[in-house]
Amino acid sequence: MLLAIDIGNSNILLGVFKEDKLLHEWRLLTESDKTIDEYGILFQSLYRSAGLAVEETKDIIISSVVPPLINTLEELCKKYFHLNPLIVEPGVKTGMPINYDNPLEVGADRIVNAVSAYEKYKKSLIIVDFGTATTFDCISHKGEYLGGAIAPGIMVSTEALFHKASKLPRIELIKPQTVIGKNTVASMQAGIVYGYVGLIDGIVHRMKEEMKDSPLVVATGGLAQLIATESETIDEVDELMTLEGLRIIYNRNR
Image 1 (tube, rainbow, N blue to C red):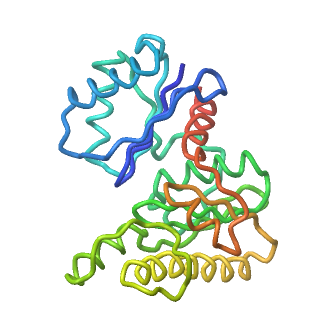
Image 2: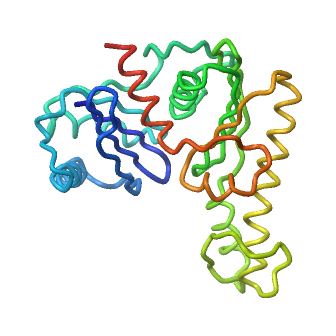
């Protein structure tokens, strides 16, 4: 079995594959101050709850945008799985040319998503990832990474609103019944949800004009479904994009 680990700023996503089939997935809070043993015990507990044995894992691949956690998770793999993980970093075969001023600047998560989406759809793409940051990544019909855009994530923006506007309450982030809110909570929900829909559609429309070849727009990340239901530009939602990308990259480096 293959264990795929994606370390994001807010969450750590885990997936266990048997050949090409995803058996189990888990989403954890990213906590940089957790020790190797704390994470190790947590991983073991997740395996037991799924009826899996740690010993069944024969390979591990890790991508990360949180540098302090790479060493922690790498040492965890050695101590608890007795394996040296493959780290997605410069030199790893992705099969995708990176047309960026400095390819080393592109986050591992963005490359993993790009590889996954292109392998699945085999056409030009715009990938929208709703994470701590909302990222837009453009892929040519030849499978080249062209670049993209980065905007503040939904939760980052809402936390700033709660922090700076002390009279506004914390709210549940759901779609409101109307755009014109009749109370403070509904007004905030309308502003946040439809404001982000406008941000997504506005950037995607401009990217499509530059790409000029009708790219498919695919969304991923925790809040992708919420925004996709209201967006006029998002065509597909793929919540497992990152894990599938890690599996593909692992196979390309075997």
